[in-house]
Length: 464
Image (tube, rainbow, N blue to C red; front, side):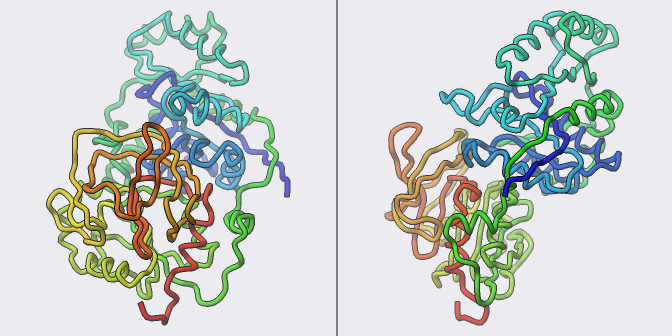
């Protein structure tokens, strides 16, 4: 059913990474939430960490919008699904405004997303080492693609009142509205690690304080009334919102019947990477989704019939994960019984024999260790054989992001054949009900992954 979505919205972008998008976007979300608005938070690209801060700022799930992982046709529907019931949507961009998948034009760029959402762009510019040149920079970004509407600029890292005056004069000559000016504020800084910001779940009290500082910085330095007026200028969007039950029906999945199996989903500080739509699809497929924290919980949830272990930072918590021998044994027993176990990246490491010398679950005959080399980027892959997530030949688009190495990198029955970029290779492990891989896949583009997993999950009362 086609519907019309009338929701004020802004896309927060920048000329490059490091300009302050996260500070501004999260601060705007928190500041407008503080005004009593219901704010829907979104993040362009595959990033899992920023949405955690967005969720903290708004009280709603942070949701990703990624044209590479989900396809351009799902950008609008997923946005409408996430923004349902909100007064305002704020979308944080990725990298520079026009940066996307390497060698594929505008695909997966913030610019492409802004055009798909028909949303005005607020450009966050690092003014720390320039004055009049800022006008040339902004003019270039505003004129590069006439379909991208730059609604104004927020100047970040401004050094003094005189510096601000010079920047404002230059942008006034260029006819660009200055919607805010931010100084450096150490309290708003968030610590980083080898894969980016430290997730909220690992530093929640400090994260709360950081988000509050971002909100105060934005309130003090930005014209919220002008930003609200800009957001309200976005035209209506037409199209049906994405719906998990509808996605399953569209994929030919029959409605669930019988007892609802318990699907445990790993969480806590070590496993913070997940897309909100995954749990929604599992629920729509007939599962009872129950969280489990491998750092704290010594047992799987009662009647667990399947397990999903997403990404995160198990290398940071290897000793603690290893010390929880009771849960490791239960995970190994669940896998040995043939129950579905789907693991991505951090989950793959947790299922290995060891991680940096610390014993893990031993489900996979493989050893993992941290390295200095960053593996990062989108991947196109095909299922090598049938698995709990996909039949052989299924094509997927995924994302890889880690600094660990697994030996061997693939089992005798690999999870995926990676076809691009680079030379073809196999990756991951399929054995019984286990599907373990470095590749992050967004299930909105593969809803049958949820239905296949739930269909094979052990029902309550059945022997495991």
